[in-house]
Image 1 (cartoon, chains in turn purple, green):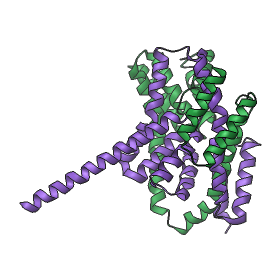
Image 2 (cartoon, chains in turn red, orange):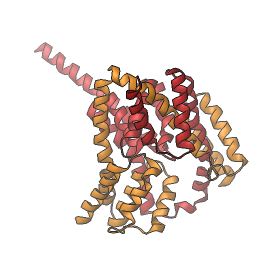
Image 3 (cartoon, each protein chain N blue to C red):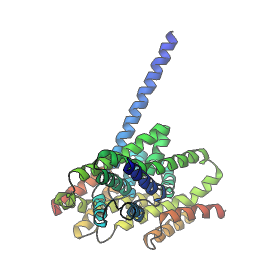
Image 4 (cartoon, rainbow over the protein chains, first blue to last red):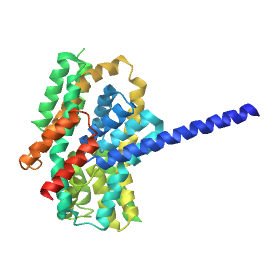
Length: 191
Length: 176
């Protein structure tokens, strides 16, 4: 009887701790969703700060691997990243929580705009805000790229592959999906 | 009732076949909501959504799903249906990919693949940054100053959300 109560207590404790973790996870991804302005890659610095550095939920190495997968799957990159991180941290419930967290801010904001503020585009404050953050986003995405390039663990091959993929996408406008596929197939073919 | 099913299926298709994320998905989204048979939005309304998406957080596919869902049905349920439709395919596919990843990540095979894949992704992130350095984002010398300030801030590991808010506040003061 006594042990039973103890186990029950422990289970309740575990459940409580899990609930807190899920709430935290939801809060963080809601924040990430709310600040992913200007395309999926804008969430990278946020993910890196919240998930990799502050909470150590995934390693930096895993972060690159997850991006490779997020980029090769269809759909919005933000959702794909959220699913992976959620799965790693909390299994299937984790993926549902992180996906909801990522999607809800944009869902709510667009809903408000569709309902009440269709003329938000001509609001000079909103316009000013975005004129300010657009050059900032370029910097916020460039910095993790530079830091990761410095930590390259694939030697000279890695440097060449990075530069080649940068050139193909930035200059020749080739879709990142092809880069991922070519890199994966190339890695298998070359020993 | 039919309209909800149509919304769901259309955006399901966008979620399933929209490779590359973001603007790479635009032609597919346009095809589903502007072109026949749906004709849900005019091309001008579609251009509006793209512009609004640039001024709101979140993926453009989600933004257009939410917006179109509301515009077509006039209620939140329409928004939710379309948004759910666009999210389900990537959700399922990424779930399967994640499962495989954690199962095989220690294998020699995946080590070999990621040895090349990781530096390729670093290049992709660099390209994403470079693609934002264009005339519509860098409008004057203030943009360059903001870029430099945020670059230094990010190198010093300041919380990116604080940096975004600071840049936005500067934008409101200078341009607003």
